[in-house]
Image (cartoon, helix red, strand yellow):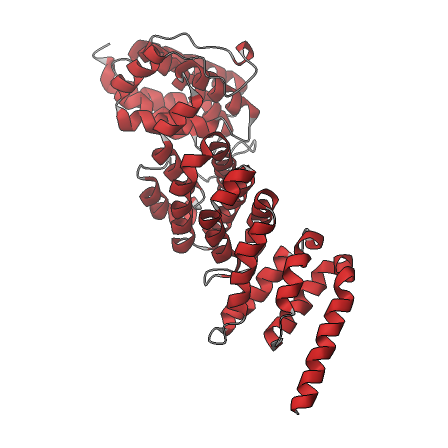
Length: 402
């Protein structure tokens, strides 16, 4: 065993190559070989096996992700002296069946930082797009975690930074992702695969962002009181420093966070939730694509905070619309009003129309009113008389001044 220890890294690479093979028979044999490798050398070669398997857990190939979760379960059970539970043993995926003794043993043996990284990756894998990966990760989670909310609080900073980093496209901003995460991201190989197991770079980025967004919403559902103050500055930082694709990912994350925040907390935390939404809607870094996704975040916030979301967001958008020193900002604000009124216009126009009709009505507000009317359709009918009276009053005032 001691002589083979130097070759564990090479052996693991061969196992991973086999797990990525097109042939089912080769993958089956590779999985058996991987389990034997873990059982025989996992204790002595933990420092080699753990980071390699964790890295594959968030990789682009779903078969490798699933196999990595199963092998990681074998490794953690070996180190923690635990019996892996089956997903059928409890219907609730959040039901942690591990015991404190196992968790403490793993934490002590693996080390604090590596333990937090491993748990964070497992948590994200529980929300994978592929059912096989989700099930494998849930089984491991339930085996080694004694209490889900408490474990999330323990790894919160690491998990949040990793999720925010996953909103950043790998191909364009890998360095930023590593900086935000604080630990190295797994490498994403973007070469083609004949059976479609491997995704193109754009698909990888979209999948990463969706998984990260779902995980952010899931974390907020479980421990929202604590996570929101820590999360929002990180999302804002990613938005400010990222490219357009990153900012779209941040908007997706914002939408999940706002939608997952309970109504009472949404109202209490509006001072934290609303500003990033405003910046995404019409800030200096907004683009039509970003604004469209930011509108999703606004609607999620409105769904939880109700009219107060309109009171917090719309006046700031109008302030930017009226800023005579920033023509581009006014254009972005007009686009923002158009997008937020594209959906649920009937609920929003009650708060938006009176703001746009305040006298004296500027040319910019009139343009914005036209943009809103363009998408509001039948929802504008109850306000037609009000709009016409305001327009006639404005024309009459101009005639008197003339």
